[in-house]
Image (tube, rainbow, N blue to C red; front, side, top):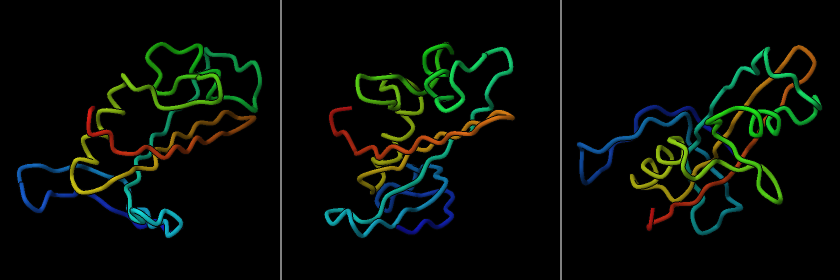
Length: 125
């Protein structure tokens, strides 16, 4: 996998449509569509939220912070489908890409955590 810095992506057929992306991801293991975009979000872990377990900072944020971008599912964390970031990613994919790697990073003085999720284009969104 290779990542290159990116900025604004403009639709080739409709120049009035554009998306701001953080990077372009080349993943040859994704044979159907080896190129996608990258969206990164940095969330400072709030001092007033005491992490119950410093190895699961994002789970603590997802369960204790109103309107946090990630939600806890039965199996793991995922981008909340009703969050504006999901709309941002889906809108970006409408401009000639089939997937995004969505990344959330947080840290405290004792620990840090990163969440990486591949999100595919949903034509019914």
